[in-house]
Length: 388
Image 1 (cartoon, rainbow, N blue to C red):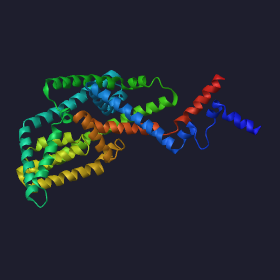
Image 2: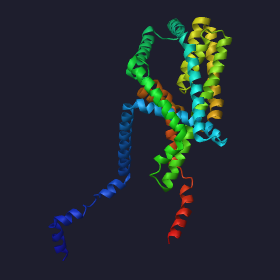
Image 3: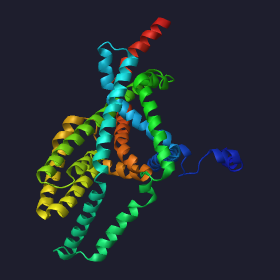
């Protein structure tokens, strides 16, 4: 009988295929061991990266719409507390939105007007002073105690010039009639989208999450609330930090009698909206102008003031005014700035950090377990009891 069984197994191909060979593994076992789990995670990661790349490419094709919408979303999150204050004082939704909208446009218009007129009239002098400062710094490096030769300096300067004239950098510059037309179109879209975000922001988000029910809907509501808090806190905190930087460095430039103090202060204000890199570059520009006009001693004092203001900002001011709005490591901020600059130029550098902060806050909210399921469970049990 045993011989018959062995003979039968050897002559039945279907049975042989169903029985694995000794030492072999089934597909379930292959994907269930350590290498299988790593392979599954790698495939999932590659799929997510592929979808992300396609999404970013698609968004870049309609950046004339995407960028105004993102800016409007950030501004709406920053001004929404003011709208809520007006509503709590008995003002209806439409009138509160109009008041906040006009106030925001007036503030932004005033800021841009001051920056434009203060920088425009002295822009040529500012560029000339900065260029002369670079030349003096180059001469010091060549003749000073540091072992740097002219070839290294020329190579570094050529690299900076190549980046400044590259397609990535030109994507953020205003050149040509078509770009001016796109800018005006984007500005009109920004104003219209901002008004509707201020007026119907909550209803728009409620409509977007209406297909979801239960715990997912609850999580999405928390995602919307947290995103608004992060964006609003970031914009308001950055504006306060930029104002303090401008007042501190601008006052030092005036006291030290550095020429072009007002344009330099405006550059500091603009640079503060680009974390880490913006303030540093504005300080270097101020030091170069002071080097040409007032000598190396005053330039060193300007550098010391810039460093002191940056330390005050990073260690005291930002934690107080921003709170938990920007819980990102400096390396993450630098990577986000680099990616944003390469993708969308200067506008991308400004938007990269708040978008990254919001993305991180969404991940934390979505993966957190704050007891929502437990709170929903009694309601589901009660609904089941009522149905019975």
